[in-house]
Amino acid sequence: MLVKEYRICMPLTVDEYRIGQLYMISKHSNEQSGGGEGVEVVRNEPCTDPKHGSGQITEKRIYLNSKLPTWMRRFVPMVFYLTETAWNFYPYTITEYTCSFLPRFHVKIETHFKNDNGCSKNVFGDDPTPMDNVCFLDILSDPIPEKNYKKSEDLSDWVSEKTGRGPLVDGWRNDTKPIMCSYKRVTCSFEVYGFQGRTEDFVHRNIRDILLVGHRQAVAWIDEWHGMTLEQVREFERKQQEETNCKLKSDIASPGSDPAIRPSFTRSISVTDESSLKKMGVTTLDIPSSQSSLKGPVRLKSTPE
Picture 1 (cartoon, rainbow, N blue to C red):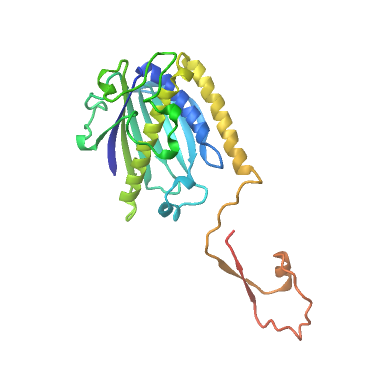
Picture 2: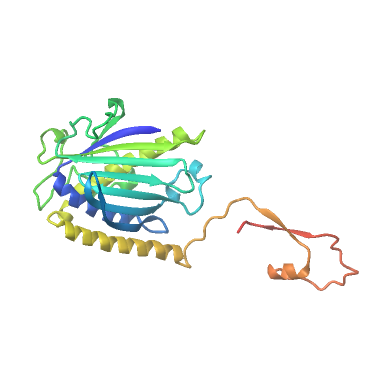
């Protein structure tokens, strides 16, 4: 089990980010869905908790087979998805990731949002994360995957017309107002001998990239969502989810989509009579039984169904 705490600051208030986060997640999920992969929303509805009060629960399926490293694809099915279940009791949220195919795989992300620059200690109220496992992520200067870079989301050039904020400069966390921090404690567990360390490291590297890209976008897109009410952003979320779900289902059902790649191994089947061969679409010749040279069953190669 590998536990890390990530702290990501943004030039926003906690109340602003509540709107920006919903907008960003909905738009980002839509952009990343296509080709049979992406995010399918299974449910999104209100919930209550005796400790945290009223909130929202969402359940999603994240299809991402092509994003797995080669060594991992060897032991997962061709249609592979994670189940994401999130309980949002803003400013506190819990998100869990599971996979029915990998029962020993589990990721839990606890989040607290605070109006500070990441200086708070033990925001989760229990055993504090050792400082060696605390990672400060800078949405301005930390590197992100090249495929995710967009000049319009580069915060060194970003200026908000609605709020007048930006651009960000070196040391911005020390004197920028307003400022808030997203504290995320990520627990990853994959208790499979020979794969545990490599898998847990892989998950944390990807979570780091996702956090950086997502929080950069929440800030860069501020002029799109700033001023929206919670009801308005929920309606935007609903429409984006409908579009994303339709896109995924259409890709999966499309007759023109690329067929799934078959495994490289084959199996043998035994055929002992002419009718069986014809059912398989094999043309046969009428050969008198007395002249037949077939002394035993014919063995044909077939890929698994």
